[in-house]
Length: 248
Ligand code: NDP
Ligand code: 8X3
Image (cartoon, rainbow, N blue to C red):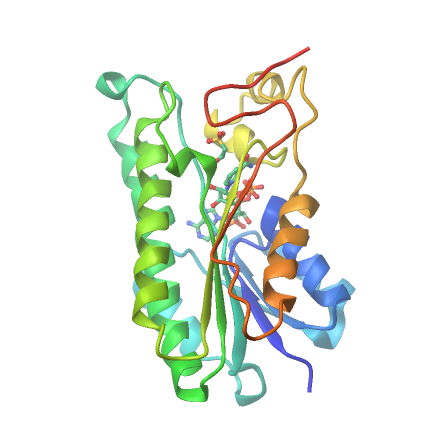
């Protein structure tokens, strides 16, 4: 039987790339997100190897119900990729938007916690599992105007480290991936649909792609059982950290 990977935010960018890579590597994939069209397309491509769940990770009640509704043949999740997330705005903290802050905190921190809380007990019971959380270079140190987004990714690091400690007595593995600049819908979302501003983020540098991060996720998942890739910082060449990006 093929192993099962559940990937949140599998409708776009890094999550969609992970879905494609894991399918190609012989996994069955539970793909979650809100974009029904994108999930349906993935289902068409992956056929019986794809199961889709449509929910907003911020809605704990619905998210929990959806996960509990998985049919028996899809219930034994082996890999969880906690990827759903976003940045909203790039403004000084003293000018930040309350709604943007709430959305980032509810999605990147509380949403990730909900999925983790629902999926990991099954892994513990089966004595098998791997949790791969998508953090960011933004969680290593704040950059100008990144404030709350950076804080959510710092929280993802602490939550990931905490989980690794809490499951250390089991065969479960816990990985944090910390990408730098990845060209996806991320900046279009961050700038509320200002595509020109979003494009500028990737000008003068060759950014990472969703596939680059999916390769890292798959590498961690396919490492031998005694190898726990705890953390990977994956930057574009010419990017040194969240603040230093040398453009040509
Ligand atoms: P995209 O905007 O391309 O993808 C974001 C994904 O998250 C979408 O599939 C979206 O699905 C999902 N998502 C967002 N909010 C919710 C929600 N409330 N409920 C369910 N799903 C949600 O961006 P990326 O692929 O770049 O982002 C993926 C992750 O990678 C994020 O956690 C981001 O912080 C992180 N990251 C991104 C970097 C980058 O430079 N791009 C660098 C470092 C980390 P849908 O809209 O269908 O719900
Ligand atoms: C996304 C990367 O540097 O835009 O987490 O915050 S960055």
